[in-house]
Length: 66
Image 1 (cartoon, one colour):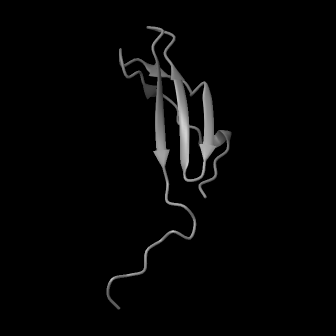
Image 2 (cartoon, helix red, strand yellow):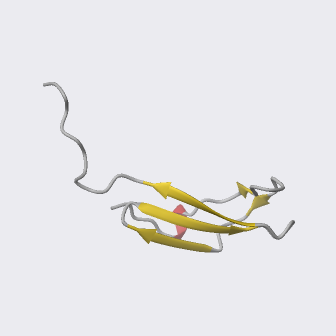
């Protein structure tokens, strides 16, 4: 399972609408191997969500050949 703390938060993500950098996400939520980020641009008042997907611990596939 992917773990994060406040030091690992993404910073300066550009707004999906106007492109201005956003200092940090307003909300972060983790569910299994997914981390959801809620962003709010103060410049244009646009809100959007971004999702980071990490492989679940122990879900690595076996190599195809030795």
